[in-house]
Length: 284
Image 1 (spheres, rainbow, N blue to C red):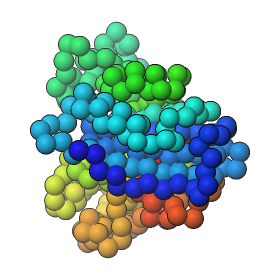
Image 2: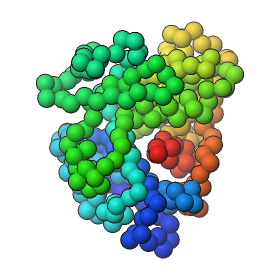
Image 3: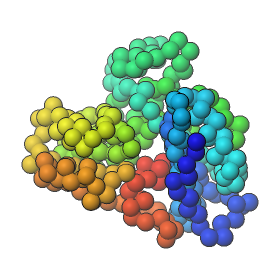
């Protein structure tokens, strides 16, 4: 079942004229979101978000069916865009130091922490400004669907975009920074200190206690003092949420990530939405 969580669009947007418009897409087994950027005016014009709720299990085939149904229902997605970027959101990825990377051994990097299959296809992203390679398993069937829809497009793993975006914004920060990007049942942690990426990881959680445990465990492993580090939260989080409250209980400097984008937004895209869809709005 597909649940429309959010549909925002500029009034009187001409769907037949998407010249110089960019489309950003993010998707996972349980959801699909997109936004449209007018590159001429540097303004975001549309935002859509859908949840996929399966009665049995989330599978790549169910995912493809759901995404195709969203495209059938959304006229704006049926157009040809000036450029398209796609982000694959899953935990089937592994960061590898460039010095240890061998393109002939892609499966060995991912299988260490994940269950893989013989027919799996592997891809990799080079992290800019880092001596790291991100090896992952993309959803090939969905990529093929996008080829049919758009022709050419660029794709990468969500973690690649997250690390690069946060590092570019905060690499000159004087104090250690822990960033936590929060989703419904998992979150990503990015740690930046001394102008370097110190750590990236993803954790599944079901309670607020799970949430704070993994954050404090990460800080302890990196020998970071909870009294001195800065914890910045983004994604599905608000200041009165239980996740924010428990983080503030154990860590002195906690804040919601500020929007520092040079781009503009239509009025119906609020500050809360800019933070919730931070990565979608920075994916171009």
